[in-house]
Length: 154
Image (cartoon, rainbow, N blue to C red; front, top):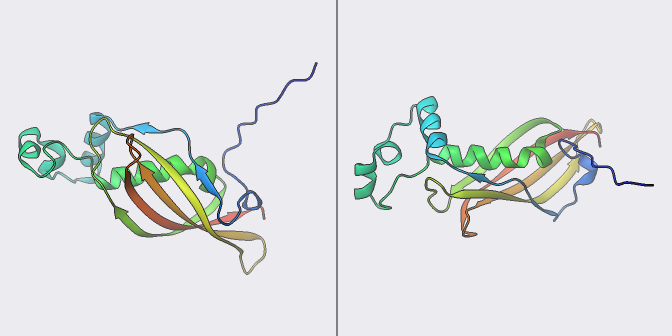
């Protein structure tokens, strides 16, 4: 009797990407208060809008905002198992735009489009140029950025 094998591969090879391809990344991540607290303590971003309920209540959004670089870090992290799991290096991040606020208990997810794919000068590696967006549980875009990733195994 035949069975289907499940392969848990971390990262895609250069040859598996196609220009124009859209990748919907799994899993998603709910941002808890503890995530936000640890991140702002590690990074020393102690702005009151991230840590003070009373201050945040009187600010523009009326509640605690998640630290922006945490949102960026999580969205990048959600793409690693596909985009950069087999990378030699992430070479560049560009055009990082926070397009909507993220709050405690929001669930965010990532989608990536392969904008360009080209072989390196050495011919032994390949360069991906991708655009990733992060969306919340309401499918509202909260962040977007582009990056260049160098992959081997072409």
